[in-house]
Figure (cartoon, rainbow, N blue to C red):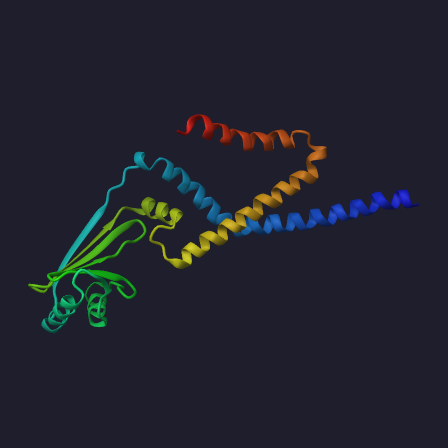
Length: 215
């Protein structure tokens, strides 16, 4: 009676573990499905970035600051010459109204004769230069296309804090997907002799390529 109970107990425990592993495996797969699909595609585009032609679109605009704002910025520049400081609230509002630029929270480079505000973004670049002598402002934005945008999203370049947090959470979901998949393979390996040779090949192949061909 005891001899029959022990295998039965082990089989029940194995079934419980498999059920939990399958559940976490499909949940992690569902959570990272779209992101893994996009990251796989952008992995290819990043690997062949030099072969994919990009045609940047550059847009330049010019404007003149109101006299009162120009005077305020000149006085501000005298106090912060050579420093990196945020723009005054009045300048942020003017940029928002003039070119729909969100400058809040960004630091500008101050000199006695000009203010330079860098506005990096995913898939392109932008900047604002304000000449304090004649109160002229110049805004330039560069768009390198949607492939460049996706590549920057892949790298988390100029994408903001929230997206960087998402990448970390996505990486955790991928780890969970891989670990549960490996444990499921372990449970089924006894009935599938090719399991560990295939897993070994998947581990050994990138290691050999890295050691022998990456200098």
